[in-house]
Amino acid sequence: SYWRITVGNSSMLAPPPKNPQADPNVTFDATVNKAGNPSVFVVYRDTQNYPAYLINYK
Image (cartoon, rainbow, N blue to C red; front, top):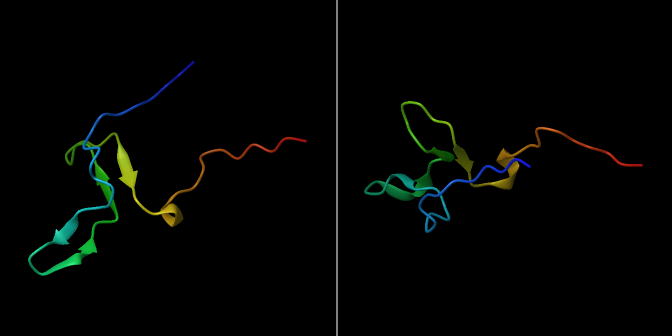
């Protein structure tokens, strides 16, 4: 079997603000593990996700 996990900041339940001093309610859409060469992308809203595969069973 194949498992892919990540260990990160478990307290980050929402995206961080873009500019906390100006408006803390304007947040990033996603975060990554490394800005220069990302391999993990985290999105925080269901509307930003789509399945890579859709499997239908009969």
